[in-house]
Image (cartoon, rainbow over all chains, first blue to last red):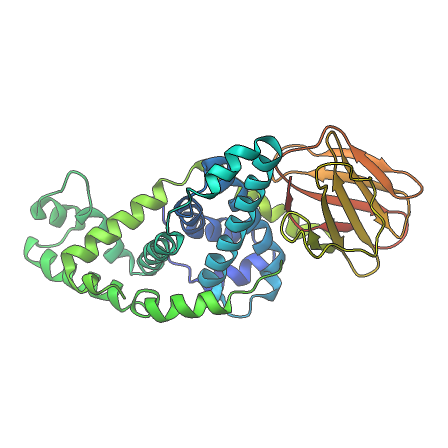
Length: 203
Length: 157
């Protein structure tokens, strides 16, 4: 699993603003799954989803100076991704209108997915990843071992962690509780509603 | 918070799913995101998309004369506005036609997020033509003789 973690989002945004490419790349790595999964969940085909991702990162580069609260970044990304998706979908329909009017009309009547639901799931997953990367390294390591596929016996996990087997169960509970208490996860519902309303939109 | 996450088993499973989702992002998508940072260092005035007929066909900008007479299908038209200049674009059957306003010569680059761009010159009246119509996501960079370089926001054709 390549989520490296450690650096809080505030630091990354500040460093990226000052020209630190590594910090920018880390921001991209952390949030690309959010942008990508929303695009797919909104019902876009892969090439269109790639267009959306390009558009979202371009906009973020443009807005980097204006982000006053890095904590609002996930909400901004959700809103911007949704807008980009809607724009790309409109344009895809427009292209089809010119090329095959009949097909377009047929498609218009068969749209029946609920993008809102998928976006919420994508936000929930992003919240878990954000909380995860900010856990202490030992917690991250333990949770990854617990998620190993196929599952590892506690004895082996204890060995890899250099800790007695008896401590794995309690550590697991403690680390999961930290995950649960992280503001991104703990305040998820409120944050989601706020993010949807507050997201900056430059076009 | 999702109520199911009060349960350790369910929370751990949800975390596993969230981490797997991150693994499923194509490398090309990460590369686009990383490449976007190149634009941070370009010192240009941003010309924002103010009008797009594909988005808002009803309220077209009537102040500017049409670059190309629309005979049959409605022409896709876009307008980007910076402080001192504007760029208007129209998509015809076989070309992307544009003009810099106020009219002036310029070097124009049409650039996608990755890959090399296409460079052309705008004539003395600021007209430029890309033929055939490029497809995909682009932005235009216009180096005018006087005044700051212009960079349009991102748009799709």
